[in-house]
Amino acid sequence: MGPCPIAHNPRVAFVGAGPGDPELITLKGLRRLREAEVVLHDRLVPPELLDEVAPGATVIDVGKAPDRRCRGQGEINWLLVDWARRRERVVRLKGGDPAIFGRLGEEIEAVRAAGIAFEVVPGVTAATAAAARAGISLTARGRASMLVVATGTDHAGGPPAALDWDLLARAEGTLVFYMPLGSLEAITAGLTALGRDPREPTMLIERIGTPHERVLSGRLGDIAEAARAAGVRSPAVLVTGPTVASASVELGVRQILASARV
Image (cartoon, rainbow, N blue to C red; front, side):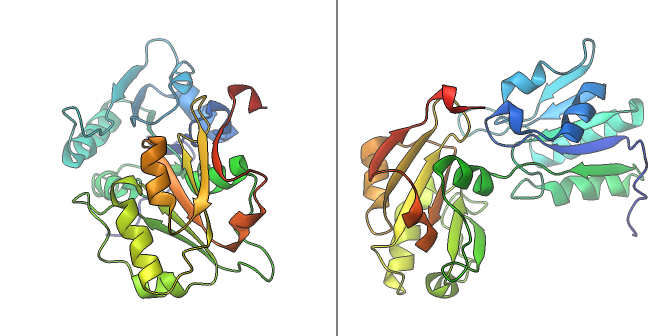
């Protein structure tokens, strides 16, 4: 089936909310949110953004979490189509960028199959937000001409076996792992066992853009142990590579103050 035409006023807008800082949503994303009649949002969406929803609009939490009953992806797809058939403006609000590990493809398939026009409004993804907050560059001429974005958890909750670990270990650039905490030891041990330097500068950025944000700085070979000692919690991203060394933080744990937002 061919793609649905992208209408000027689509019934479904997939909107990236950005990371934890509510001010990092795009102007277009904010406009779509304020126009919405129905909003289906993820668990990690900044709660302040929901205050922008118009009075009388329907707001539905479809977020997934390991410690509560969650709607399955099939039910979320059905809700999108059902509401889009009954309302003119439906927003699917996703944390970060909807196209980065956000199951966007599955949800687009559902609305496309139903003949519903849609659009995608990109958002700031965790990799770029984490780098910005930590004061590092993900790429640098002569040091890191490659950026690899990978998942740290497969659909079953373990290390992603489908990744080419030998290639990642040899990649001369920056690696960013989303959702790495459950597999952090396996990720770092696997990379160093295949030849990546265990002394390589590495960071874990926890709860990006929130008042509880922390940056844990260390080396690839010991960051997993440091994360356990510091009690790092999800959501977090792992960033490792030569450009991390340029970060203006000392080794250890740094608490980012809420007042750092501008």
